[in-house]
Length: 452
Ligand code: GAP
Image (cartoon, rainbow, N blue to C red; front, side, top):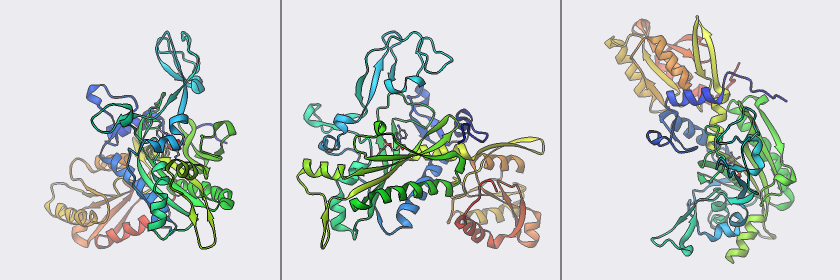
């Protein structure tokens, strides 16, 4: 098992590229930021959208047993009582009477004193810690104009509960029958005590969750199926196999709702950490909501009636995006000049193709290039760039991970061919301008070898 990240990325280098190239900005930057809040710039939005698109493609579009949902962020507060989050969604917290910082009691080894930080993680030299107490992670708010207990509500800490409370709506309106899934992407909020490590732990993040309802006797088999299916998804989108491992939870680690969970962990440059969780939630949630709401939530077939078990793969967009960025980040020297690039899977890349007239002032070249660009962008995200030397334009596209550059030059005007430059191999080949769009669309469909 690897202990060290293989590759050129560090969290600092990835964060710096993300800022320089408009992927991610610190939030409320001009006011000094806000702990672990980030804003996504143009390329970050496109990359996140592609991550979500690939998740939807594999879970909804390419299957016929999963349907979509988009539920509200603020639900009836009774949902969170029944789900166990009001009583149980908490971390043990300790305060330091000296430096006034708060730490997670179960993660002191990652903490540092606010007054006298130690070079050695886990040594908090001058700290005088209180006894641990439970700190609920849900953000509270009030619905309506009166700030009183009766109007208290929560921002959802997981999207899953919106799915469970819609179980009856969906089984009675869609043609579904266990085993079937309900998939949802949306914002979740957690008042994390120790956020940090760039995008890894945020207080506001988008989750991609799917609740897969199965006959109880099939739950273990489906749990194994989804762990492997989700692991495959990450591999197919380019993560190195040596950077992925599956770790079953110890009993003491299980969430209040889970009877078994396996984490798909990724070897981030800061170590092995949870990328995605795949839980067997049993019939916990449907039973809790049946009891609390008085509405029976069960599957009623022709000859059978039961409360399904639930298998849940759950991941946040940011943890996936951060893993894809770390795996893709590379540095090399080409012709004595350093090159930084993102070897992103073409389907994840924010921009698929850059169209570049070799000489930006040549009217005939510009005209051909604009024509190609305007045609391409109807089918894929593309960029046109005629400013600066061609080498500089290539480097900029390398840094944002654009897999293909199409260059229009003198020869194009003679014979209608253009140059196709490959980001990873730097190989250039001449292809007919006319067939360029079809060629790229075909390439986007093909399996991709990141480091072939
Ligand atoms: N519905 C189950 C659930 O929410 P979880 O393990 O608490 O389970 C699921 O969260 C996934 O959400 C994690 O595997 C991780 O990808 C992501 N996640 C959780 N907390 C996060 C945070 N503070 N910042 C970013 N992503 C987070």
